[in-house]
Amino acid sequence: MKNNSAGKVVVITGASSGIGAATAEVLAKAGAKLVLGARRLDKLQAVAARVLELGGQAEVMVCDVGRREQVQALLALAQSRFGRVDAAIANAGFGFAARVHDTTEEQMEEIWRVNLLGTWYVMAEAAPLMLKQRHGHIIAVSSVVARRGLPGMGPYCMTKAGQLSLVEAMRVELRGSGVYVSSVHPGYTETEFFQQASRRSGSAVRGGGKVQNAQVVARKIRSLIEHPRPELWPVKMLRWAMVLTAMMPGISDAAIAKTMRPRGRLL
Ligand SMILES: NC(=O)c1ccc[n+]([C@@H]2O[C@H](COP(=O)([O-])OP(=O)(O)OC[C@H]3O[C@@H](n4cnc5c(N)ncnc54)[C@H](OP(=O)(O)O)[C@@H]3O)[C@@H](O)[C@H]2O)c1
Image 1 (cartoon, helix red, strand yellow):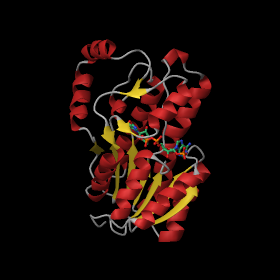
Image 2 (cartoon, helix red, strand yellow):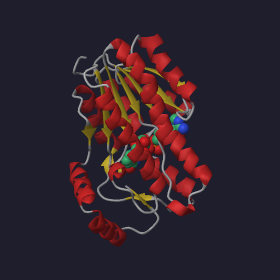
Image 3 (cartoon, rainbow, N blue to C red):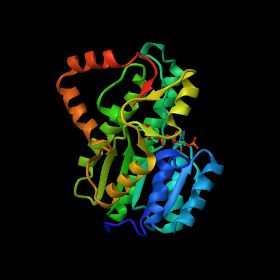
């Protein structure tokens, strides 16, 4: 696989806003061919128009990642339109705030279906076609919370940890096949995410720590596509914080309890 993005065929789920839309734009500037999926067609079309202005090519399709046949159709569109899939980015996702024991079964099922099952659909559908091509890169947009559950957002953290587990397993399963598998672990990024999470939670949900711009995260995702590696942590310091957290869970609990309210903050 070439190690620049020009001409690469990249499928992105959740491309109608935030990190997904910014990644499409950054890759468009590099001359990539994009296949963009999400539920809001008008927003996808606006992203596709920007991609064209920036010198890329784009196809869009309504795709709810919780429906396997729609994920299949998105990947099939990339193959029929551009002949292959060089990278598939499972980015679609949402969050909400609720304590573990207050979460309803419907909330749990929905977040599991979109964030985790939706990621697995991309991985499970992209892998066979990439193995046939003998190259490809599957990328799951997880979070810093993949490595530490946070109070007031256990179900969201669970899906992010689940994504990381799938990526770690698959990366070794496909080792040597030409298909690479990576996870991305953004910290607090300025997107629609918190607006959507607040709407779902019925109370304000805010991020914590240093805020990043979606374009910054997107540029790092571009570099991940060009130079595959196991994990991308856009805020490097948070990676080390998570290592310490894993080594000292009791101290980490105390520090988190002191700094966070039980509800209302998503990292
Ligand atoms: N923002 C942060 O601070 C942050 C931090 C760590 C990780 N992340 C992760 O980054 C990813 C992107 O989030 P973002 O921050 O860019 O938020 P965002 O602006 O809200 O974007 C979320 C995207 O996911 C799509 N989506 C939601 N449900 C979907 C479904 N069922 N099927 C298909 N698409 C769906 C949305 O499009 P439609 O509504 O049009 O379907 C939208 O394009 C998420 O996985 C999130 O967990 C975000």
